[in-house]
Length: 214
Image 1: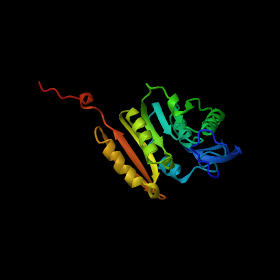
Image 2: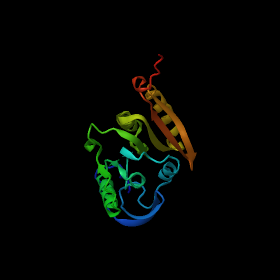
Image 3: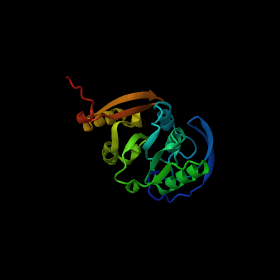
Image 4: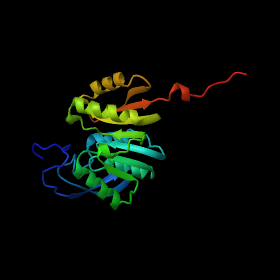
């Protein structure tokens, strides 16, 4: 891609559509990818580590794939939970077009591939699964997480995979400090030079069961 980044809104590089075979949610699939998006030739190592080290998603509700690329996480979620609605979010219009093509070709009608501003304000998420775009810079990344993590419903988890050499440990410390009230943060897995970080949103005290003594 030269100097162009995969998080460009409208990549100027040649599209160069290609078909690749991947395994998602235990199924062998053929998907379409292209130049100008993240990891166009295979499911990248970080995403593979994330998918291998997260629990099955809830049966229903709204899910978020933040920085969806051509859609391996979104498609895995949609296959695993056909009654859920998966929001595949990216700023890269080419990536969003690929997600839509791949969802349509495999009958995954429960995927909405949209830009961040097109997610309705009232939507809350039962889970977030993300290989976030670390290379956008620390300030941009922190702003993204501060926007989306509070939109998880109570007793829900967000799962994020980050390469150790790109600051996973410092990000974990930042998450723990930033989401100290009503959340917990822990490292759920390590593999192939990546960390899987889990952010848990707890229930509010008023929503916890109350024991009434007669």
